[in-house]
Length: 387
View 1: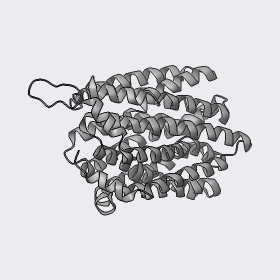
View 2: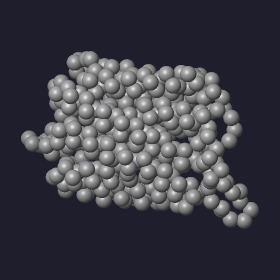
View 3: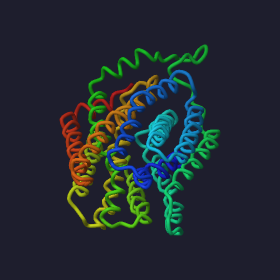
View 4: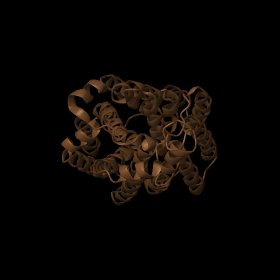
């Protein structure tokens, strides 16, 4: 868990700054994010289907991380827009689904996911912060530091994760026949049942809104912080403080799930994201903007992981990986496509200002909150039904 998330922590928060250093404006940066998100309209479903029907999930992790290492090595060598677009798109198709697939791997082996997963996922949050120290030291020790170091560090983390997969528990696909005397879980009927479940569909739509808003948080927060005066060397530590708070929240998540139910936890995440985006839309206070990363941590714990847990409770065992990767399809794919396309257009029409972009992100978070609030009782009942 920690190693897989370290790959993302090394690259994703710093991507926009690296693209700016290569001479790209926000219009072209947003096009890269739109193209990379478009791959997640297809690949998460492909990886989820392979994990559920053909390839043991632990082996799939090795293949995806090996491919992501190659994509990062290719991206680091690019100096033109076309090469950067291809490299980052390949990286996204291979890397982003692993953040949900590792949830599915955990759900397969934890006897009580709603109680145990939060503490396990906390190690992913710590893993996200691991690259921040070497990156900050790199930036502090050089008069003209290059953020290309983050790509090399991400490549190294991918290769370490490939080695770690040899110690992951073996996870055979549940959607294929597993030998005489062993129960078969038909994939097709289970998938049709999942996609006809109105609770699952509502979660997908709300997650589309939340993920689009969170994508703006992920890719445009560092450029805005740098514009208002936060030195580049302190950007990583600013996010690290929020991620450490995220780790603490994960320790309390099981108790909060029992107290608030799934819908209450997910709504708390919607509220945290709305508050965080509004701060970036209107505030110039450096301390307030940096400390608001604690709200970003609350979004991850309450909304992103809370939604994943509820989806796991709704989905049948034969489509458990597919149900998670469909979240990636709308969450890392369709949602960010719309949000990043809009962010590029809004920034271009506002003279490069990111404030209106965060106003738009606030509206997306508010829409997600309204969708969940309208279906609280049904979502909680679905989470309690046996599957």
